[in-house]
Image (cartoon, rainbow, N blue to C red):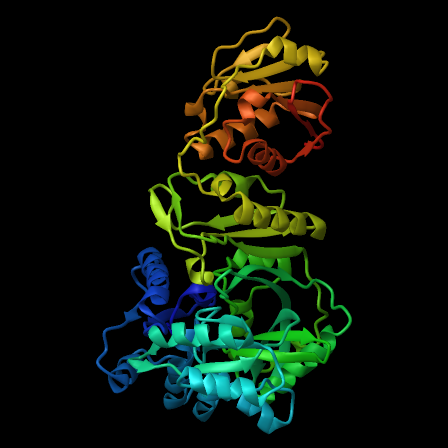
Length: 563
């Protein structure tokens, strides 16, 4: 069986493993060092260990080699027909291996332009297309000299070689630049034992996009376009919020794709994928950086097929194994099957997570496809989010209706930034004084409850004209009640927000379309963030918050709008 080598098989590159096997080839994995500080490398190492643990035992993994010459010799034993990069960290090694083995690749002399941000923009300048002014710096003084040399107030400080948003700092003014440079130089990025250059650039402010391309023998094809939304954190760092598919090209998008093809020529791309990140401002498109590997985000192949009708690693293999195919495929019309997005959970601060309500919340979203969290099932202190690799988790969204996806993204972002305990439970019940118990019969009267009423109670409440259930008995209740009343007044009911959220969702499912859920103040006061926290859970459940009734009842009312 012929072999195909994947160098650094992490993130979305893991999809190569099955794609190679489905074609009747055997994958061979080559392990290479990650780039970054100990803090940024640790989550990537954990990801790699998880991938290796789940990988089939018959897939060879080459690691613990003394030097490059030994690696070449060990790879040569498999007589591979292709050597491909599975992630950004594998690009230099994969390119060199493919070249030394006489396999399709990009010119090795172009590796600096393919992997180092300063060299990328130098190549664009030499080619005569738009580039970003920048300079390699070794001190705060170097940075100040650059700031004084251009007419700008906004700058970016980042490592010339890194993945995602690792070590990226957005700076306004010299003071922020000095702080960012000092912080970076105190904890430098390391690449194979060598310190990575620190780069300062003029900051381009606009909308950020992704153009994913494949190339074969110098012929280029665009396969997908995405839009990125990133968030600036209080410390000036820059983190991913979400990525969404661009399902139709808007004004300026075709210009960006043509510019992306020029970038490929300037960088010297002849073969393989490029995940290019671009900014569009008033002057048009400009490159942020190229990454000569599949798009990241650890996106499942089935998810990509559901939104795009294809997935990138599959197209990459098609392009390499059938060189003539790209001539036909580049004429395929750009059509997306559904709206797709991936949402990375942002933790503004280090967060103690005892339970994981986020799992139940993600699954309840109308556009939910799949989610991935590396920590549930154990109490853990989650770090402040600084990059894609140490986000609190990721959820993949897909729906025929674009508005549904965008509403789910907006709701999740609101929760993570303003109501994080709704997503990551810490088992602390908020203290409150003057604890009271609502008279449920009076609540039913004030809210004009008629017909069938279900009461979910933790204090054994029973009212004539209603059916009561405790947490354990809720699942045995039939569906189709006209209204439900949430009578959970014991603080113990709120120590596990994950289980509580699951029960509230089940409770909502017991109410018919057009029915209501009524929550007295004595219940929602126990929720993290009080009434706001309860409203957040109801919105995730798909309910609609209704106008409150005038008077002293202070009940929260929501309605079931659709089933």
